[in-house]
Image (tube, rainbow, N blue to C red; front, side):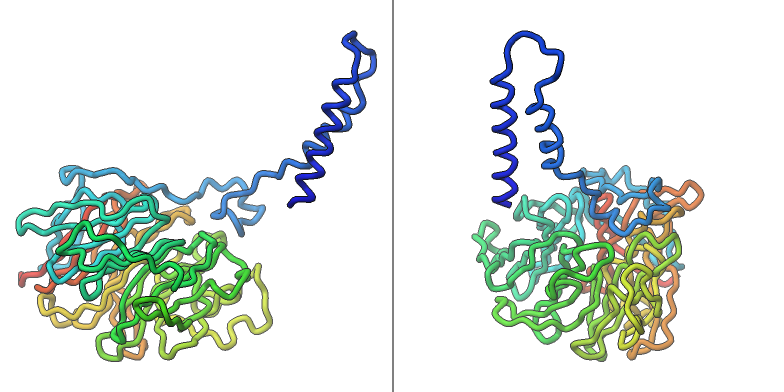
Length: 424
C-alpha cells in the first residue's frame, strides 16, 4: 500500500511540475507531462466494486432487477397493521402485543417479564415493559453494528459484529453500565452474514453463529460458516458445526436437547434452488456442506469439489427456495392443541432473490425426535399478497410466554404479535 501511494505521489508531482513549466501562451501541441500523467492517475483509481449481495450473480443475470429489500425501520402505528389479512388454523387468534420498535428481531424475556430485542440495520437494542393492558419501550443501547441480544439469569447479553456487552441486573437497574467482554470472544471482522443470533443452551453455554462472508466462496479463514458455543464470559470456545452459510435461528429439542437450526441457501442459482434448510446437530463437529453442497445434496456449480456432498450432514427438511427462514421455536406449552406439543414453529421472513416472492409466513414442522419423517405445513399466511407479488409484514422470531401463548416479532412493522388458542 505504501509503495502504491508513493508511486501516485511521484506521478502527481511530475504532472504538477510539468504544468508549472509551460509558457502562458497557447501551444499547438498539448503539454506532454500532463498527457502522460492522466493514464497514471486513472490507473491509480480503483474500479468500483459490485455490492456484496451481487457476488455470484452470473453474467446471464446482469440485467436482473432483484435486490435485497430495504427494511421500513420507522414506527408503524397499530392502526396501519392489517392483521385481518392473516389466516390461522381454527381456534387460533393473533393480536398486536406491542408496537413502536422498528426493525426488531430476536426477542427474549427476563424474570420480571421485560422483553429484550435487537435490530440489524438500526443498531439498537430495545427493552419492552409489559403493563398488563399496554406495553412501553425504550432503547437500551444504540449505534452498534447489527446487534443481537438475549437475557440469561438476570444479565442482558448483547453481541454485535465487533462488540460483546453484558448488562448485569438490567431489569431492576435500567441505567447499569455494561461490562465489555469483546476481547474474550475473539470476533472475526468481516461483516457479510456475520450478524448474530444468541441463545443459551440447556448446558448453560452461549450459542452463536458466524456466517459465511460472501454469497458463495471458500471462506478466507476458518473463522466463518460455523456455529460456536462459549462459556457466558467468553473464556472458553468450541466450534460445534461447520459448513453453515447463514443460520438466523436455532432451538434445542425438548426431549433430546439437540440443536436444530435454520440455514439460508445461496443466491443467484435461479428462483427454485437451492432451498433453505432446517438442520439437526446430532453431535458436535458435523459438517453441513457450505460452500460445496446445498439442500438435499446439490453440488455447487461455482465452488466445485470432487464428491462435493460426501460426508455432509443433510437437512431434516428443506424449507423453500430463498424463503429466508429465521427464528425457530419448539412448542412446549399447554395452551395449544396436543398435536403441537414439541412441534417446531419456523418464521420465514421472505425472499428477495426470487422473481415470485416466497415465504412471508409462519410454518410448523412435525418430525420425529431424530429428525425423520419431517412434514412442513402452513400455520400463518397473509403477510404477502401472491397475486400482487407484494408484502406488508416479515415475521422473524418467537418467544414462548409462561401461559403458553407465542409472541412473534415482525421486523418490517416493528411490532410483536401474540398468538393464542381457545377451543372453537
